[in-house]
Amino acid sequence: MPRVPAPTVVLLAAGEGTRMRSAVPKVLHPLCGRPLILWPVVAAQQAGAGAVVVVDNPKRKLAEHLPAGVEVAIQERPRGTGDALAAARAHIEPKATVVVVNADVPLITAEALRALVEAHDASGAAATMATMELDDPGQLGRVLRGSDGSVERVVEAKAPGDASAAELAIREVNAGVYAFAGGPLLATLDGLDADNAQGELYLPDVLPRLRAAGHGVAAYPVTDARITLGVNDRVDLARVQAVAQRRIHERHQRAGVTVVDPGSTLIDVDVTIGEDTVIEPSSFLRGSTEIGAGCAVGPLTTLIGAKLGARVTVRHSYLDHAEVGDGCNVGPFAYLRPGAHLHERAKAGTFVEIKNSEIGAGTKVPHLSYIGDADIGESTNIAAGNIVANYDGRAKHHTTIGSRVKTGVDTMFVAPVNVGDDAYTGAGSVITEDVPEGALGIARARQKNIEGYSERRR
Image (cartoon, rainbow, N blue to C red; front, top):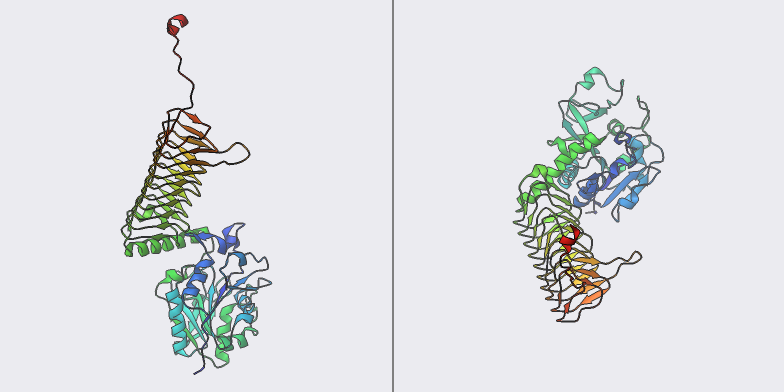
């Protein structure tokens, strides 16, 4: 039996998206941490597409945002969806099934795409279109069926005159997702014309031409209209985001994560969370954040591209591309910047800021301190109000503090400086020279008391 090629998925993304009123192309607007265009791309890849093709416009802004292996075709002029698909014809195999999706439909799932392809293959039709019934179809194209239930054509309703009153009363609409047999599709694309109010080449006009050529056209009703929700403006984007965010929450909840208040919690699509972790209210988990099992995150916590091990507690804090090992405690009101790495059982406490630094296992930076461009060993205690002065106005310098060190409150380390293992610093010291292992470093003026000073002032 000859091999049947895996489906080719073509995403139509050449539109300008002017209703977004943005300098950013519509399909590059973010949705739960992922550009709109990548949602159907990922769904197509997960559905087993043999090829994914994105149709862009001549400004060519999408290629750099697409994963490796995704092809790009260019629609040179904005002449409608039929012309956009024709621009991808070089990527269409005659023997393959071709799935066509508008790129501004981010909620389409891999399961829905697989189901459409399976229904199309089982029908033997040259085209199968996804349809849905809506109480208020608006400007969506109406589906006209024949007496045998097959699809005769789609009547557009974008402008006055496109459809009659009887046609506008039809509630079944084109969901904007199609499956075609590659050969008949290629043979029909060249015959499209722009005989409509918009003067465009409409992709649904392929359907009556396929029927006229003796091919069948089937419909695949979609029961969940949310998967074909499109984004035309920012109101639509917010509506779609609410659905996408709910899906993300439910996925994590079913995997053993407690989201205490989903309504106040934002979780991006690529975030991973381990079992028995609790996400408290008003927490925002962004980017490629990874959270291990048994953690407590929040309330009022933001993690951006952060990596948390198991049994980590983070309260009222902001972590930006920081790494936190097993059993660590962060916050409240800590700020861990890029390059901050807390090893297991370490602590970054109240009003502590750490950037580009290694904090050793069991080491504590409990409160009111800034640690930057530093390495701190294991089981060291950094007292309150310690500052690493790492910048001289021209360059950043490094500080090394050993293991089991105990610093006094209000110590300043003027980099570059090294403090050996088991060393101490005196409270209020400004450390500008290395402190040897086991030594006490004190760098402050001697106290002088002036007797009778208050009386003399009077």
